Image (cartoon, rainbow, N blue to C red; front, side):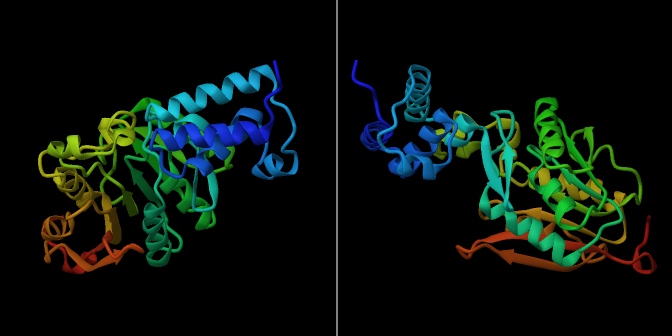
Length: 288
């Protein structure tokens, strides 16, 4: 059998992906081939005539088949970059999106150093771990109902040397009264009726627990706001990622008698992506 070279494997892989209507076929083929041979991208072009071993050929073929079947590249390579760091991901967690970096940026701007922060529904831990590391070690507790998700987040914390804690809890139910000054949350916000409209990669592979936010897509926000109000210290911040068309409904949940300095941050596409609100100081709060 004629040895399969890196150059030929890359060309054939890109062609298969293109014929299957996979987006960015050449780039995807590069990523999958690098994963199969355990090398960086530069190796493909520095050594185009290098042959694949039988094991590498088998791995590359399997990765191509998985991607053509709809499995996201990140779940094949188990890696996604977020805020300049590589995070381990599995099908137990959502794949961190670049747009979510706006949530971390907003938190760092409003609360450069937290006394105690919480990442609710942490998934891979990308938000809470990134905030912890970028804020020079602010204490952060990562909460998720899913134990498999917490295992992924724990692995990422060890790999990135993040000294954070973990709690298995539904939303903020584990939070104590006036115990934190920053709550971060990227809740499930896709309306359940929109399932059929999702991309196959999202609908069939990403965890439904982290995707769907009830009939309207905003129900989880009401739960988090209800639990965050007593848990935040006076003057503490609650910062959400927003779903598509969720801004008005979520903003309406933030009563003026309790919340102030409500701020909306738009992403690079112009969509409202982050909503931040500050709990009023103790002197102006009633009923706490």
